[in-house]
Length: 321
Image (cartoon, rainbow, N blue to C red; front, side, top):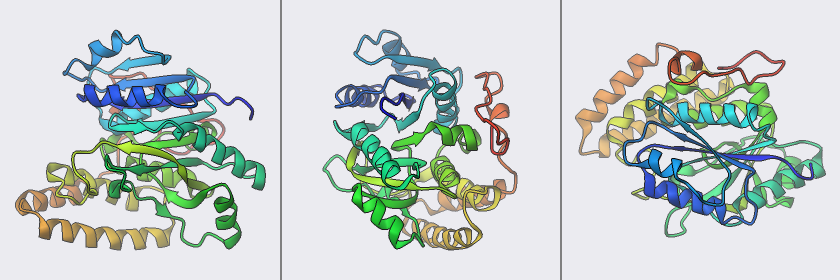
């Protein structure tokens, strides 16, 4: 594909200064997306006013929601618009604390096109290498390697400067739009955390997903750590949503569910044991387990009265809408 249409999707909530850095990073790229869909999750810090007055070099499509539906709901809205309103070939996803480096988009496209040309297989997505403000690889964005990838598959990825992975975070990930049309959207009811795990694992279960070493994005989190770095009240979402992935989604194979459930239980135990807020985390854990028995609501239900969600899927009618 000589000139693919690339649509970036940025979801923001009450982080105007970080959002400005995100947009500046996108605009400074050696390749700039055709459109940037910006979903404002009912910010109250002047973000909406800033975006309405935006006069920068990027072509933008601003969606201002009346309620905060979390990163998960925001990405559902943004990806739907990218596919249906802008005829995207690739959708480039990032949160508002992401700052793509200059070559991030171009390198990701090169990996996708190079791997496809060499193997005849188009990757479901290309994930950027994610670093913290000091250049260290960010532990919150470690890629899950594809266990059992063949030597031929690993070699093919290596030849284009990439590695085979199973899932990625929504911090500069380039998704082939056809995968969205085939498998549907993320699940809005996750609100925050692990919606990216579920979605990227779902679209790559029977396909190829790659991490590029040359496509790099900065992740401007307050601390250098993963989700286990004393998450406070958000621990509820970590527990509930991971259990939803393991019990309510077809994103993982049965043996992956067993393996990842065991790893999560160990990580949660360490997080609780090392936290000064054990009572809060134990409460979040109990509530997360209890609420995981209820399946996620449909995207249409979550967004009812907030955004008129349309169906992005073609042919296959499975998956959340």
